[in-house]
Image (cartoon, rainbow, N blue to C red; front, side, top):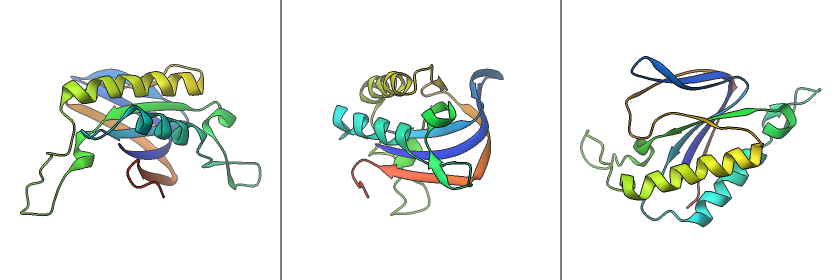
Length: 150
C-alpha cells in the first residue's frame, strides 16, 4: 500500500458536484492499493497514519498526533499512486489492485482508521471521478509505502 498523507486545515471531496466527505484539521490521505497488499500492510499503515506526530505543539514543534488535536481524516482511493512511468509517456497501472481486491481493503482501511481515531472517517467514492480541494498546512506531505518501511 502507498499513502500520500497531507496535513490540512481543511479538505473536501466532491463527486458530480455533491460533497461526499469534508474535514477540518487533520489528514487528507490518498491511498493506493496493489495486488500484493495484505491485512498486515493495512494494519501497519493505519497505525502509522493515526500515530504520526506532525502537528505543532505549544513550541511550534511537530510533536502532536491526530488524537492530540482531535483531528480528522479524509480518505481517498487513488490507484494512480501505482503508476509506472518507466516506458513512454503514458503511465501504466498494472500494479494497482483491481476493484475486487482493492475495494474490500479500502473499506477495511476506513473501518480501522475510524476505530483508531474514534470517529467517522470522511471519504470519497471508490472509482469515481472525484474533485479534491484542500488547504495544505505547512505544507506537510509524507509518502509511505508498506513495502518500503523507512
